[in-house]
Image (cartoon, rainbow, N blue to C red):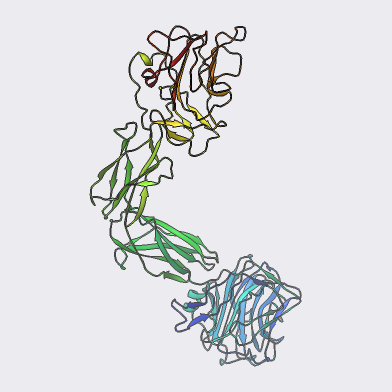
Length: 627
């Protein structure tokens, strides 16, 4: 767009007291004429444009290097009454004549400009007063002529036209045409030719922005209704002439101000189609003792966001800053904003220490960074944490070591934790940390020799049954409800409903000696219930023991593969009386056939020459079957 602002102060030298441009409409168009039959004519009577003094200003772009064409014309067919800006073989000329004896003319086309048929945009200005006529190109005076005879206004009936006149049709593009009832000074023209004209500027008679983009009428932006009518459909083209406003600015809030000695300054700048530079000014006062490097923003018409990181700030200090920008229209400044340089705490999580089976100590170091601060720990079974200790105050200037003892943990279950701290700058939290409570140590005696796996079922929650032997034969609970963990004969236990089970995917099969022991309790006599098994294919070392139909204890073992017959032992144990053991079973030395235990039983299967007994099983009557 050529403009989007609602107001524009005419800032620079020249045009003193010209006031404010209001209601500017945007656009990026100009009007292109073909040089054969296209033109524009102003409305009003023929006398409307018989102006003196006078200034004509406009932008043109042409390649018409041969022949003649009128760019602006208000004259009869003779040179004795009227004014005109013409192009002759690409050379710019202008004249003003009120009669055959009173004129600004040199007999060779008038005031001499320069060659402009180079396809580039050029700004033209022709000023006439009692001192004569002056022709300007791109803000610079090219030539001037005095009056011959007395000065005065023209008086003719010709129309005010663009791109045509007695000198012929003009081939090229025209934009930003203004007519003034005063002769603008060289300083005014030089300082303002790249800017949009304020529509209420003193002496402005007509102003055609040429931004409609459609239709056959070019509106007079002054509101004086001196509209232009286009003949034979000249084209609306873009881009338009390189004019604009002084940049408009908005100082945005600073960001990243809580990172201690640095911050990011932010602003928005609209170049308004003039090449623009932008930067920030900042300091501890509004005198601003620092400036950032300039940024090149180009000459676009849309707002641009700019940012700049500044360093070397002092913590707890207030800083003022604003955005600044400059283009052909001058230097402008945004409003002042203030930020405070602060920094959130630094947190460093340390290693967990004093880790046991149900406890551990988590540790961290926290730096408050010159502000009152609090620190605390968060922990739990997952990264959702869920537990926290009370926040503690930190030293303002020095790092503080903090720690917290966690009790009541589950052995072998990972604990997630992190350290957190807060001050005026915000809250920070460390990355997730983790430690795993130890498994309780087994008794160090001959009992542990050859131990392959040990599942005490003491987890109390979750879907894993951990192998506490030090091995990796961990079990996974399948089809269990959430209340499957129960008090047991020793610590915890698992309650089975006949459809759920624990599976161990990498349990090694024994090929020579095997012992299995477990505490069980059942409230009824299930039919063919498995307590433990490693069964289902033809490999040696498979075993299964459980309860047969009627609740009898039964064990099976396959020692050497499919060619060796299975051996089994059935205890036929029944309630309330126990029959003698079957022929395949006999008590070992020092052991006795147990009486029926109403709540729980210890079951021991023995193969080979050695018997493996769990510590709890070794202290109670057990049933041992030698196969």
